[in-house]
Image (cartoon, rainbow, N blue to C red):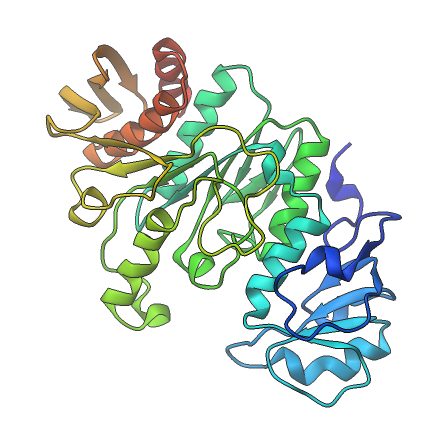
Length: 354
């Protein structure tokens, strides 16, 4: 049964969680410790027992909707500034980070029980995600996909609203996928999601950075900031798989070292070094790449090439044409190879995508 037949975005049926269990390190002004039945950052979605997060917006400020949240039954609010309200208000440095980490805790850290691969970069995220999903399917895994085109679980798919959903929806999606028996999730991670801390509290088994070029300067302001945000996806990857600061320690249930897969031919990606406890693997067309393509033949309906997976050459016939798609295939192959997938299954997955 699809979880989209039920309302699971903001609450878990019959579940109550103490606020202190959701925000053990974020709360700077301890107060009452109410039971929470759901989370919301949109006051129109608040229900009795909910915890309301006042997110700073680009047009409106969530702090302006505290009274509406109270009227709808919120038991407390998370704020970034001191405000006059009869609700218990918990002051935090970042409401967005608090929402992300509270969402992960509220849904029981589903990412720690899933194999999660995050794919970021200016170009190629969607194609790489579909190729990697195809490889995992050839391995016999039940898969989930989150990205620009759609969100897809076991037996259902729906059009995407954002490339990377807001953290509350993201954790809810992962929780639903876990309940459906999904084992491997491939998700696109946009620069907006990185800057707005939507993936805080989510543990990755692997990250892929396809390339970093000029884009989204309307949001990030300048090229240096954009590059720093993308680079931070790799540089801030911790040994527990989370990205960025995490005061409450390692995410529950992490196993092994996370993997960072980088484009050796991209000057920004190729120069990146992940932190301690993170494995690094590169892909590209040059001899220095760990996973590289050679002897390629570009055709109108696809590409033939030999992909070297370490010391093992693997001939492939891709159905997507163009050298840029061969680079995308290398990224997916490297991510799978670095996580122990057999070369024959990688070939099958690459050749199956149309």
